[in-house]
Image 1 (tube, rainbow, N blue to C red):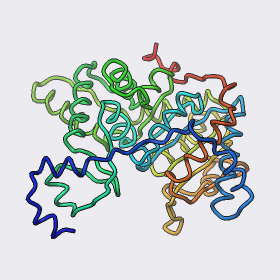
Image 2 (image 1 turned 90 degrees about the vertical axis):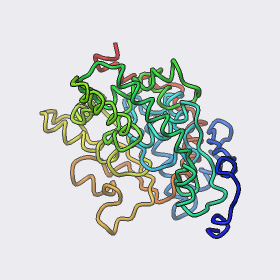
Image 3 (image 1 turned 180 degrees about the horizontal axis):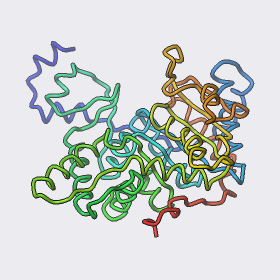
Length: 358
């Protein structure tokens, strides 16, 4: 394939258009009812039974009137077709708070909120050729680098328009949601819907994303003018998320992937104890969908059973599902959507806990 690329005489813009010709279509969990297949999988073995139990636990979270549900996302499932799925969980009051990677929130959701798209990589030439065409690749998914730079500069404009002080990632992402309400081109955006429904979003490694480029430019430009600049306060992230855990009581974790977001939300229990709130309970429910391995001692931030030794998660109602999340999350989410426990859930609107939300 590389030789074909080297001999390709087509203009770059034509070649790029051909490679970016098939948009990723995000799945709509409302359009199909997964309850029958999940019920059947519950009677099987291996990963099928694990998924059945995980779905049952998520439905328990939704039916528990005292449970605050945290959606925890790492990895690239948003770019791969689950973006509208996560947005629907916000719209239908099926989660109360989001903890995610910066890439999930900025490079994927906010990026599409601006009107840009992800594309299926039906053909993969060598990656040096993709670089020459300004095409970024996530496995079999393409992103137009020029569109991603528009995302970078939009973040920069938002930062330039704010008071120059420290912001938690939650506070800055709320400004991004406000921007999408006023200027966005996609209604079904998690960032936009979270703003509208007062669902806080935290990105503990926020600048590890397109936001980082825009914010670095903001600081460099301000420093060149000898003026103050805004910054992201990661300690404020931890404090605010712990505050939600303290006031939220019982809690459940729906985790896709692991890593920093997973460890961050689990650590709120320990942080609450350090602050003197010894009555704060461990996370009552926990589901993790991951392909990470346990043999390196990590499993992308510990197994749920291991987390119990740290006083973070109960082992009574938990389930690990070792599967590629894009293949099983549509089943889990569709099952829960059609069982309808969300219809009688109280909206918690945890974003209103903070003074800047009004």
